[in-house]
Length: 343
Image (cartoon, rainbow, N blue to C red; front, top):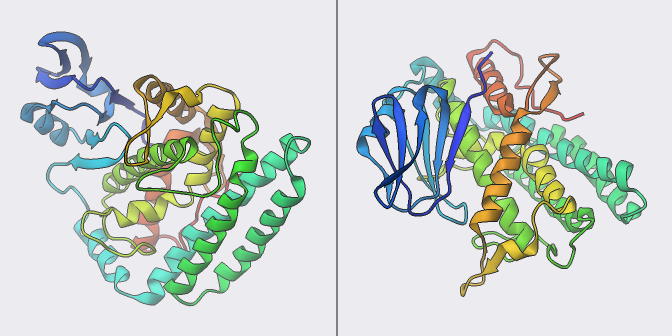
């Protein structure tokens, strides 16, 4: 089993990263503020402006340490990778299947099943734990809709049909998402999912968490030899990691949505940590971003029982396990790709 490594988040805008021997050196105003050994790191995620030295980029590529650049609002900019280490035969199989509608439907239906089932589980958990604080009837109605959608997904014959079912399920889920915000409703109002830019604080938080998850999933796919840019559900588009977006669909509810609700409902963050830009988009401040990243890292350390492996593993290894299972299916070792169903 892969070891869950550390992720180094660089949130100081003016920081510059360089290499000194086997250490990452963080400089601010020409002064060294931190040194970290490379062998302890799995990923480096940068929100800083000055950037990273070419020597450090090369060292990360050689050691298979992910290096990702994001904008301050969490919007993805770029990922640095070295020589392709993927298994040639596995990627050829991936590319060949991505050109076949029947193969895409078979794989994509598993992603959608996992997403819809896990969205339903988030709703059912809120009904169970906070039934007196929420509109139980409204939540139950959407839960029933998602349950019926699962049967339709299993019977879907085309990608267009699957995408339509996924879209309608997401629309209904987010229609009641705001009702699962139990505290700070005035600071975190939520009516619908909005992106590019996010129009409210909760959407800003969700977009940020989704970006973190996409990066982790893309790294996991590359680690098992798959191409994160060639997917089965999301259409190929230059610069878009379609397979990473495919795989993260089933993980969004349990990784990002639940954490967002927890951060708000437990008042770990507040509306004061968000500001509206002239464009109308919402931007998270540095302190709030650090709080979210700390909670993200803590959540990754928690253990979850994996229904397929029949063992408990850290949350942070789930993307790697699901990527491994997908690779095994593409190789022909499994009869079907088993999505993660949260229980």
